[in-house]
Amino acid sequence: MFTDLKTLKFFVPVCLVLILSGCGKAALNDDVKLSEGTESGSMSPLENRDITNIPFSESNKDEIILPPDEETPNQEELTIPELYNKLGEEIGFEYLGGIYYEAATDRYGIWLKQEAYNLREGRELTECELALEQAVKEGRLTIQVGKYSTAELFALKDLVKPLFDKEGKTIYGTGLNETENKIFVYVGVNADLEALYKLVPEDAVSIQFMYGGFQVIDL
Image (cartoon, rainbow, N blue to C red; front, side):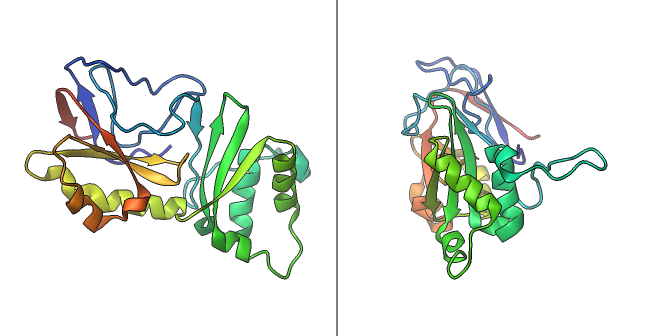
């Protein structure tokens, strides 16, 4: 996973406890570490489902390591995350917008930019693409068209950094929201959202309101 910004530690208990740990639970937070004493006022539409985000990028991706002299496995033998990674190698990770797993339905979800579909025009689908299409038919995968690639979402996260140190610190951190092809931005109730949207597009942001005492820790 990607962990590159600031982490929050909260001390004042409030009504709702966010738990971002455990198998199949939501790993939705890159730069903010939530603990007891925190509540969110703007949760994802998938808040009642167990979601595991599986971020991939060209510089940080899972690779299939085979023993010496072993043949490359057939595409149908690869897992969906492996197929997603393979697709990125074939067409470029700049066309992929994220992957996550929904435990409640035992189904993966992936985001592809529209350009990824445009690349199919006038050619046959690769074995990897056919395997992904088959997973959709079998109900094991949902493919959605997104506006941003994973790399673009990470770049948007970086654009928010200058607001972290503003007086009052009403913008506390960011995270990758791969279930919605957006970034999380953790803010206080008095956050200057107008300043935020001057830096990043509003349609790329999922606002999470934070309450209670906190301490900013540089890692």
